[in-house]
Length: 96
Image (cartoon, rainbow, N blue to C red):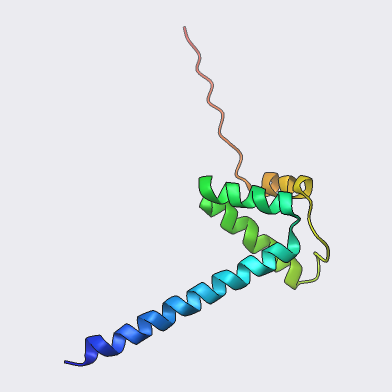
């Protein structure tokens, strides 16, 4: 009967760990991006969360491997976004 009660503290600790991990990611990203680039990434997160996550993972991996050792500007972030984003498919309709 006490099994549901024992899982509740685990849920709370899991939520706390997830919140700590998210806060750690945000601190790392703030150290990697200038304010304009950070604002752009937040705007992208609202529209395309999967693209924002991919960019964040790329930036954190680049910083941890030593390839990124300074603040990224907004223009540099735009270039990274263009390289990560999937190209849009163009459709051509021929009328006869």
